[in-house]
Amino acid sequence: MLNQKQFILAAVNILSIWAAQSEAAHFHIKDLAKTVLHMDTLSDWTISTVLVSFGYVMSFLLTAGAFEYTNPKVKDEKRMAIIKLELQYGIGSLVWISIYATTWLFLVDAHTPYYAYFATHDYTFTWLLINVAWYLFWMDTFFYWSHRLLHMTKPINLWFLVHRHHHQFVDPTAFGQDAVHPLEALLQGPVPHFLTFVFMPMHPLTASVLGFFTSIYAIAAHDGRRFDLNDHVKHHHYKNVNFGLYWGLWDYICGTRWSKQGHPDRIKFEWNYDGLAGDKIQKAE
Image (cartoon, rainbow, N blue to C red; front, top):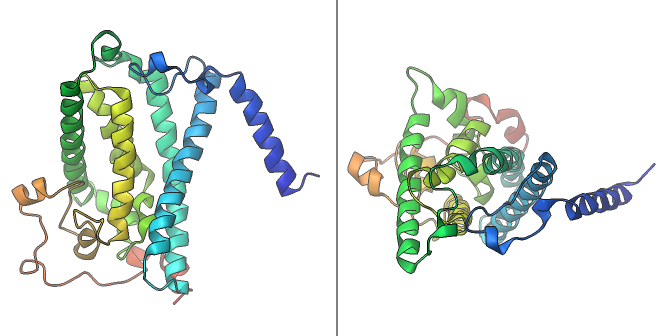
């Protein structure tokens, strides 16, 4: 029988051999104007999904871990129990995101209206500015309105079915960013990200870089300190305020921006919110 170390080494060796034979394992500069992940076969898709999942999870763990390590809050038993539960939700969500992302790139991307646009057109500095502005506006807009949707209780109670999983963490840590229901993980991540390519020419590399920094920004928001530039932690404290992603544009327009005068009372700190995490968290109290 293989011990744990031998099993991991064997798995890495097999994965390396498979990757070496996979088109997805080779970096194609010429393809960056078309896609950031080249896949021709089901084998390519499989190995890409494994590697992307690993990359997403490691980025999440390292970034959130750095924020939590520098956070001055006491790392008592209760906080560690919260982090453990956030990790259980978060890692599962990242796997779903990875599967969606690689499936879109494998099956859908080439059929979008502006696919490979910059393979035949110059990508100028003006286009870069347009892409950045469009991406940030679209992502923030989609996030705000889909977020409002997730707070609805009628005609479908999406709050109870989906979003309460995330709001059980009333005082989240940086690891709480991806501690969401699988549907929410898709709705507020890869779905709007890839839809940016549907409405206008978008360079795949630019979108990927912006997507990466958006994930870092969202992790910082759940850390709740000075890098929470949009004051997202107030959304966890007061529930019906600060729905936006990057800034408060739609919150100001729609009257959902937090203010001390309009929202004097925080929601009650109960770690058994709707009974979801009660048994696991209360053991640490």
